[in-house]
Length: 113
Length: 112
Image 1: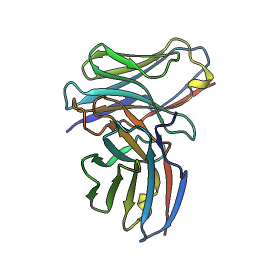
Image 2: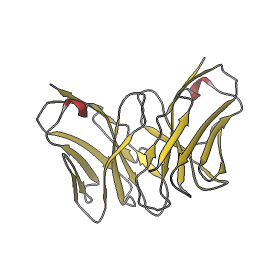
Image 3: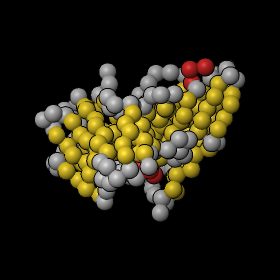
């Protein structure tokens, strides 16, 4: 069966520090991969999605970036965090098909001080 | 522009009664719709989906209804149980893309 791992579960970072969140999927190949953010009291905002290695689509211009160095690995990064980057970050995958549900990791709670 | 809207931020229902969660969308290109359930500090869990060629899909206690002309979908939970207490998100996708647009969620509280 397929599983998705996301880490760390919680992270506290100072303003201006870098960020790297990692997500890996097991049990499937060539998945579509997604990064979302849920700000306090808000819905899920799509940040990036990827349909293949090295293929990244950005939905929201900001100081975050994403990379997909391997088929089942998706990384969310920032060179310099802002206070507004605080939130709950979720990685998700779906099968390489246009009509399939997404499956989410357990998320990372990021607090910027 | 919010393409997927859940206008009720919260809903309370007695155990054993029906819970009805609503969702409206604006993009007529959406043709695949999903409901997710989310507990605090966890990722959303997929519940049920429906494609635009259908107007109803059932899975146990969960039924999703789609009204394409009104651009409206709803999730019915019958009977509601305390364990159903969570935040419910609806999502929509244009199957010509790989993107899913989520609503802001409705917090359901099932009272024992």
